Image (cartoon, rainbow, N blue to C red; front, top):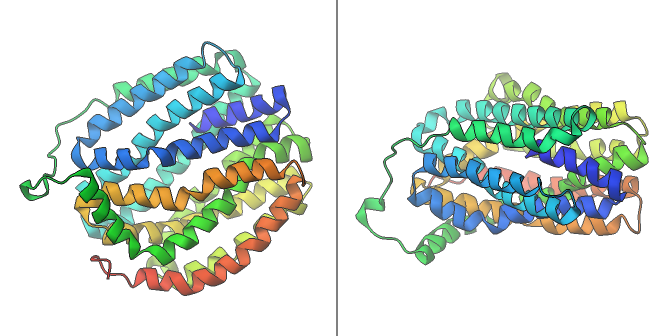
Length: 371
């Protein structure tokens, strides 16, 4: 999906010269993830996860076939929505497989590997999307179909013992109520994640416009910029599991959030694509130091029998701001420049960090029962 977004974000700017139309591409991506989170979570808890993983590839293939008919904006949006649905099923299923098959003491060792794998996926996708823009624009859709078909072939379902919750039937309503009851205990932390995710979607919304309109840069440097965050995440991942950061340090995690403010402000005032690339690299290095201990803690405290549903709630709540803010950021650019909006986002991170200093230690004190 990264390759698709990289390629068609630049395509939209080149053809339509519109930040708003690109912002809607991001909004559709995020909205699709959120709308289907609940049913996907339900399926994860009751079906064979490897089977879901296989069919996720089939759905993505159907989405990419649509774009073969036309590159008009509506076809781009439709193909994006369908392929994102398949991608979301794949990502959520993978997390559930890790939760099901690993013991709790291996979670923190597994999460850095997951982080590196996700980062490599972003890098490879960015390279494919960027290289296709420059070298093979007419063959890009066929490249996507080929890679997805290979993934489907390698994802043949395997037998898996499905949990029956002790033989008791659970209705969808009861499942949602159980997950909702648990999530109430995470409400303070979710508020922080909600607003941070909403603000940071500005990077996705404006990255193409920043390099295309403000910096008047090339597709090559835009591709490098898009790769900088995942490369930084690979560089920062070992730090999350060694030395000082080996133990959970809630206050340190909260304090690290403050660094995002100057990094975003630098993006707003910089007129050098190379400085922006380095800035994005630093952002990527900090992210795993924050994300890995938080996600590891989540895996420890979420009950296994409602894991899929709880994670669906988490995605909806923490990601709920993203499509809304994506649309808002797309609209705001009509009245203000991209640098001014990024500067404002950087300033707004400061009060959120102060709230994080209070709420993140409380999150780490939650027991596996959510108390």
